[in-house]
Image (cartoon, rainbow, N blue to C red; front, top):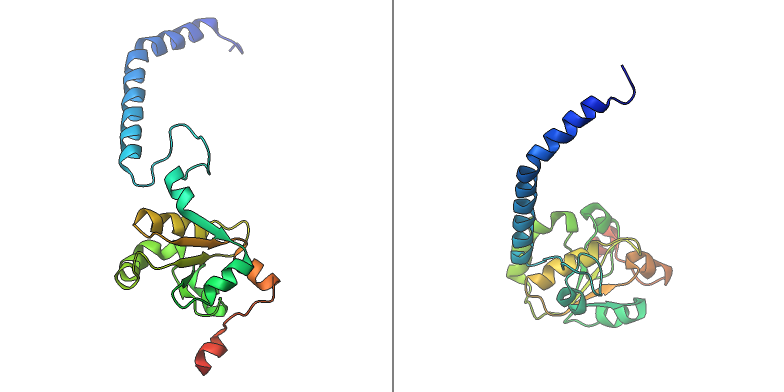
Length: 178
């Protein structure tokens, strides 16, 4: 057997050329369905990325505010602001920002109906996750914005930035004392 067989290659190329109209029709149909589905989805991806973040529609990105730890301290001390921990439940139970409630990204779909019943869409929200490389708070924030929440802020650096500033944390022991 030869390494390069011209006769076999001609046969393969011929078969591909004969099927080309069918291949093009399938690819075109898939593209049309993908664009239609993307257009109807509330978190649709922009066809051309202009500014903001990839995968985040500009209108969502523009509504998602960010604060550092000092800005977050002011929000945490405001009784109107609901602080939301988007980390996994076991990590929330170990320690979290005082007064925070748990709305883990990985359980968002299961927990959102109860959350929506009890939290006004106009209420200010402060979300955080693990740290700088963590995108859970932003993902939950995007989901909340597309569901009508109007005042969503993310703590830049997450709980790691909070800890680095030696800001207060709530632990299971402290919760049991209250």
